[in-house]
Length: 328
Ligand SMILES: [Zn+2]
Image (cartoon, rainbow, N blue to C red; front, side, top):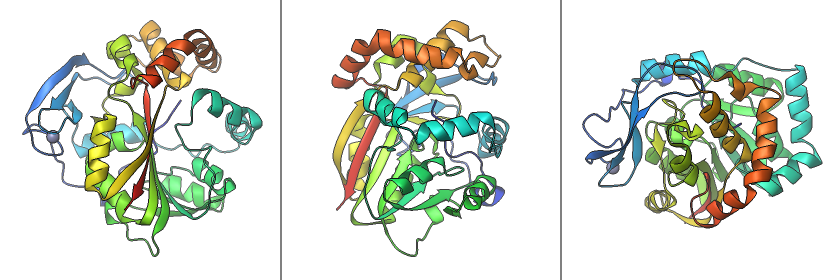
C-alpha cells in the first residue's frame, strides 16, 4: 500500500495555518460541498469531514482542515517513521523491490512510484522518507538527492549512504538545478499544493521533468466505494485533483504536460474493498495490515476486476494520476 512520504512537521518548519473556512485553500473562491459524512477509515481517528469543491478553480479539499498543530500530532501518532530496519518484513520487502517479480508486477499493475523509469542526471525525491525509492532511482541510473521534513527519517537514509537535505521545499535552494523532481503521492498531503508544484519547477533546469503521482479525483472507485474509498484518507489527504487542474497548475508553474497516464493499483482497490467489508467507526481497520488478507485481496481483486480497472483507466476514471511534465 502506498504510504505518504511526508511524515512529520518539525517545529521549525511550521507555517501559519491557512484555513479554508473563508474559501478555497488556493484561490479563496467559494466552496460547495461535493461529499459529506466522511471520516477516517484506517486508524480510527475521530471527526467528521466533508469534501468541498471550489467553484472558481475546481480544487477539491477537505473541510475542516485540522490546524497545523493537530496535523503534526496526527502525523507523529500515525506516520512517525519507526526506523524499521533489518526486520524480516523489511528484508523481504527490500528483496521483493529489487527482484524481477516487482518489475513484472509494475508492468501488470502500473508504476505509481516511478520505480520503472531509467535515466541519467540529477534527481530530487521530494518527501523521500527513509530513502526506499531513492535506492531504486539510483539503481536506475540517476544521481539522487532526497528532501525530507523529518530529521529522523533523513538520518536513517543518510546512514545507508544516501544524500538527504532536511526542510521544506519552499525554502530549499539547491546548489545546482535538477533534471528530475519527483512528487510521488505527496501533493495531496500539502497545505499549499499549487505552491509545491511551483517550487518543484523552480529547482529544475530548463527541460527538466516533474514526475507526479496522486489519487484521481475523478476515479470510478470513488463513486463505487463512496465513504470507503481508500484515497479519502482523512484528514491526511487535504486536496483532490483532476488531470485538467494539474495541467493548468503546471502551465502556471512554467511547465507543460508530456504524458498523463491513469492506473488503478490493485493494492488501493484491495484497501477500499477491505474498508468496505471491515470498517467500524472509531476503530482502526486492522485488516489493512494483515500479512495474509491484504496480499490475498490484492491478487484476487486484480484477477477478478482486471477488465473494470483497465476500462476505468482508459476512460479517464482510473484511481491514480501519473503525470510527467517538462519545464519550458
Ligand atoms: Zn479555488
